Amino acid sequence: MASFQNYIVKQYVRSARNITLSRKHHEDINKMRRGFELIASRHPLPDNIYFKRFFIGNMSAAWILPHKLSPKSAMLYLHGGGYAAGSVNTHKALIAKITKKAGIAALAIDYRLAPEHPFPAALHDAVAAYEYLLQQGYPPQNICIAGDSAGGGLTLATLLYLKQNNQPLPAAAVCISPWTDLAITGASVTEKAHKDPLILGHLLSEWAARYAANEPTTHPLISPLYADLAGLPPILIQVGTDEVILDDSVRFAEKARQQGTEVTLQVWNDMIHVWHFHWRILPEANKAIKDIAVYLQKQIPALQQTAAAGINMP
Image 1 (cartoon, rainbow, N blue to C red):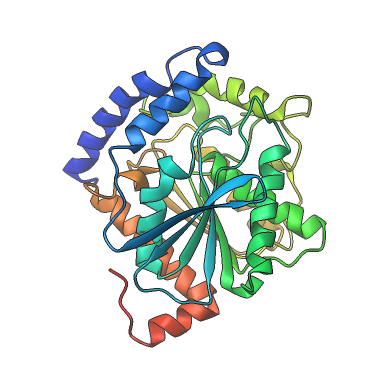
Image 2 (tube, one colour):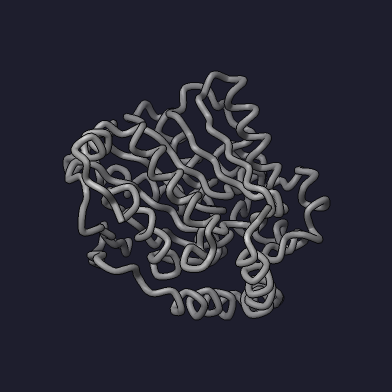
């Protein structure tokens, strides 16, 4: 049974949606982005976090480091926001919470957004950030790529791009409520519409068209569900039962497993889209983040050594 706090979170999210997602988009896309930033401003960083802005070429990025960490490991985090909104700023508190729990450095980026910069701009930025980590001396076996929502889909697209171009793959990936099907064919889009307090199903097609631009939404690097999923590193997927894109996770996991990729799928009862954002009040968010930390410590050698040394991450 879900916590009482979950009921409060759902009511809050439904109200916040009226600020960020209910307006018609092209003329109001900047208002939507400002709405995301306004909500994010209410979520400060956890204690004992080092945050430093810098640039990778022309791309704004940030290091988010916990007080205690393994110096040999890094997580590239790709924020959500329908490929049209979101930023390092909107997601830095969530990223910081994950880094504290796992004891890992995080690199977060402000990848280019649609419609100004449609596919493949965001993908190219994600690949550039991964290559930056390699250039900084992080071995691929000590890197994970993580993301939520559109960022979760972008995480998977990045893995596919690296595989297709014979580049070294990271140790693992973590996808929170990933958007894997921009063709929007999952039954949950309609079946869960009455339960999802955040995503309005009819807006998904607008976001998808904005990002895909002149490419089909079934392009495998736009919608990883349609890709050849063999040969990818281990993937953790966390998704809630009350999400309109629930089927994006379930179908991706089923297909990836059939093609030989190791996928750990966690379906959380009564949880909403990226419930992890609400870790300050929601017990299920903290449990999910802890599960992410445990998963990363199993997949990344440097984190295994840190855990074996008895260093507790607050």
